[in-house]
Length: 483
Image (cartoon, rainbow, N blue to C red; front, side, top):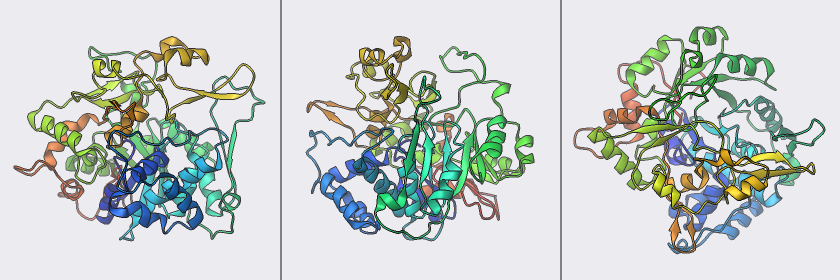
């Protein structure tokens, strides 16, 4: 769903309908800072900050970033500190508060659970992010794009306000290197805090092997799986074996990449199916397979409540209506080295000539790779940064070919683009699942938009006494559906 596409408005709308609303947890510190610099439209951030348990911390962030009436259109956003293994207290404060704000707003006005989705690849903010979400009472933590073995144990420790650690992946690390990140809630918050509810943990997986590994080796309880196929939006798991491309330049997936659902059922934990399940018949099919429900992202990404900029929504929905909507699985665009789904949109970074005109810069750093320097320290590089900079850090020039700055593009997607030198404005790069064309089913005759409620109603059509799962939603207590 991308950074803040599945935002608090969408998650709240879905959860209020009895499904599980899931907010994206990516780059929430940056998003909070930009919302404040845009004037906090509607006063929602201020309202959430007023409920944060440490008022001095919330007020520091307000003073640092809030601009009454919003910044000038051509003025740049004030930067936020980038994360590192030993991030500053200011960096962690912003992260804790931002995750609290997003979950608080998603939970406001109803009693149903809300979830938050993180990427294992984006490790540096994990600990303060998870703690901030738990402070706000998040009900579910979902995580994919890696093997999140340590997360269940982190949830156990944070529930008791105990210190937790996380081992940072560092390229070329030696066994004796210190790669441990830590976060001590009581010490960081500066006071005794009450016990927190431990959220349920759902691992997003794409193989039976990973499911088994999570259950055997995770540091704590895994409460379920989201089984995500290669047609899902965002990052996809790479195909097994040697990478082969079709005539469009997309990765070829085969039988080895399919998950054996019978073996998943035998594990005895709840699971949801994802990737191409955004239709009533697909929900029925998933339930017949023994799934608790389905996860749906694309249908919600283009609904009225999503954070995607309205102009981009309308342009892509027009393509859907005309039958010209296309999604490309780009094998090299993402610095993570995972294939990445890109909706083709004129004037966006999906066009090579548009991206070629962009100044090559990496100033947000969420997808940076940690690596060991020749002198034994940890530094960071990104294959989307200037080539000479990347190579000077020991990276290979061939790894930079075709790489795109997803971090800045995702901010443009949600109408928070950085402005450079008063002239260049960052362009969008919109992700979507392969079933983009299928969102036409949610448009009523003559309508140019649809709401989250239309998606839920359509998906639940002819399905009685059960619920489904979407990237904005699961309810694991009985049977479940996720959005």
